Length: 486
Image (cartoon, rainbow, N blue to C red; front, side):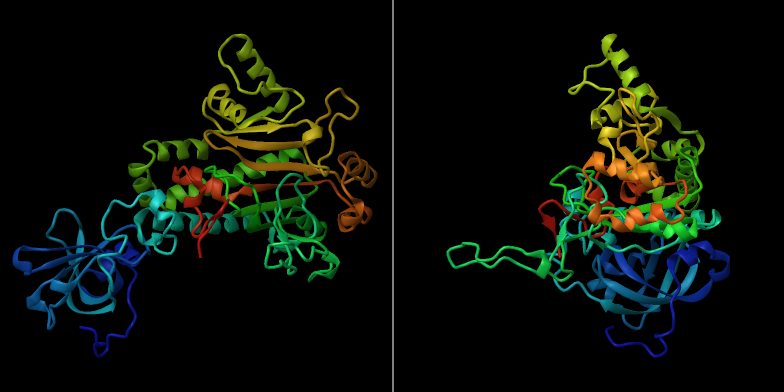
C-alpha cells in the first residue's frame, strides 16, 4: 500500500504521549508513525506483530496486523525490520503478557522501505558498540543510542533550568579565536592558506598568516573562558554550553577532538562559591535525569552497568569530598610507605596528578566518591589563576579539579587573577605574550572584580550518567584522532 490513503495526512501521536496518557487514548482511533524494530508473523503468516519505535521514548508500541481488519494485508508478507510506516488503528489493552497496550491496525502506508534488506546492518541484534561507531548515521535507531540521546537532551534542558534559577545569563562565545587559553591544549589552526606542492612533492610556499583570512593566526577554541570573563564584567553571572576542540593525538576512551563544554563565570565569588555551584549543578542534573529518564537508565543498567542507578543516587545525595593537592599527595605517599600501593609515577607535592593518582584518590582514599582537589602547584597551572601563598617553597593557586571514580577529572575551575599588576606578573612568569592578550588585560584595567569560573566536560559527565565507557558513544558524530566520518 504505497499510495496515500484519503485523510491519512492528518497528524499522528507520539508513542510517549500514548503511554503517558493511556486513559485519554484507550479504545480510540489513533495514528502513529515510526520504524519497525521487530517483526514476526504467526503460522502461515496469518497475523503480523510489529514493535514500532518513533524515538520519543524507549518503549516500543505493538501493532497487530490482522487481514480481517485490512483492505491490504501485503505488509504481513513484505514487512521487515527498519521499514518506516504510518498506521491508523484502535489503541486497546493487549491480550498478550509482554505488553499492556497495542494498536489493532486498520490502515497503513509504508513511508520508507528497506531497499537492500540483505545489507541493512541493524537487521540483526549482534552489532557491537565499536561496530556502531562506524555507523553514526544509523545508530540512533538502536535503543542504546536513542536512550543516550534523550538523556543528553534532558541534561541540556536541566542545565538551562539550573542556571536560570541562579540568575545566570546564557551567552554565546566565538568558536574561532586568536588565543589558546589553555597551555598544552593542542589547538587546531584555522587557515585558508594551503601550501602548494610541485609534482615531486616539494613545498613551493609556506604559510604567512599576515595574508590569511583574518591576517593573523587563528584557532578553533579549546575553551571559551577568556571571552566569558569579558561578558561577566557587565552581566555578573554568565554560562554557555558550546563546542570545544582539541587536537590531542590520543586513541583513549576519554578523548575526542570535538566535544561539548559547559563553562561559567561569576563575579563577586570565592573558590568555595565556585565549588558549591559546580556540585549543586551536577547533583541537580543527575536528580532530574533519575526522575525523567528512569526507563532509559534501567535499560542501560541492564546492558552495561549493574550498579548504575544506585551509583547515581549516591552522587545525587551524598556530599562530595573536598580535599587539597597537598593532602592527597601526603595520603598517597603514606600508603606507599606502608606498602599499600605502588605507583608507576610517584606522587610529588610540586607536580601534577596522573590518571593513576586520580583513580587512587577517588576509589581508594575516599571510597569511590567524587573529590574536589584544591590548590594545585602554581607552576603546572595557567597564568590566570591567582596564587594563594606567594613566596612559599611550593606556591599554589586558588583552583580545583573535580575527580570522579573511574573517569578522573570532570570539572576544572579556579578563581581568576583580577588584580592588574599581579596578572601581568603571572603572565611574565608563565611566558604569556602580552601583545596577544590585550583584551584580557583590559578587563583588569576597567573595574575588575573578584571572580571565578569552571569548565565541565558535558560528554564525560554524560558517560557517568549513562554508565558507558567510551566518549565516542556520547557524541552523535564523533571526531577523534585519525577518525572523522562524514
